Length: 209
Image 1 (cartoon, rainbow, N blue to C red):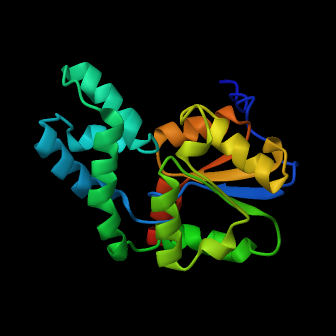
Image 2: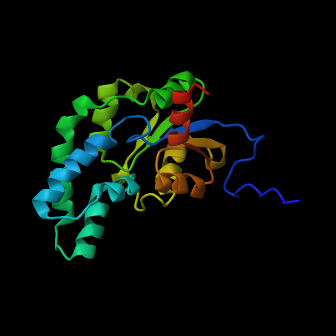
């Protein structure tokens, strides 16, 4: 008989109540990733950066400045990663008017509004994330919004989720968090929170499960 594997130590107990919910934004609350990719294609061509689409998606949740710093070092480009990150944001911001909600996840936030505190924990910039939330008309749902400028270590480190939990006054072990990337899921689990993979959730809703 094969033994049943133990639950990861970071997972909350099944009997432990959820007292707060934290959401990533890009790719979780908002269908922004294809638009980010369009902006990245412009920047990659301008600066002769090699960035395959598959790698772009694998870096979901990592701030643009950190992606650029890594790519510049790998490819010997000598880029000013902060300046080029601002260029990328300038390409992306006009596209926000095209952003659509990910209704399966926004619905979770709406269902829990007023019941337990809600927060956003995003690797994007505060300017961009606030514009996205305002465009979708959902900014008012969240008691706290934490972005990449407000923590030292980015996903897959747990810092941004821990800071979001702190701001809504809920211990991490009583939080559930929603993410759409492997790096984000790692960050949630490292924070000791219950992790929900939005990719699976959206697939289940699409199949009517």
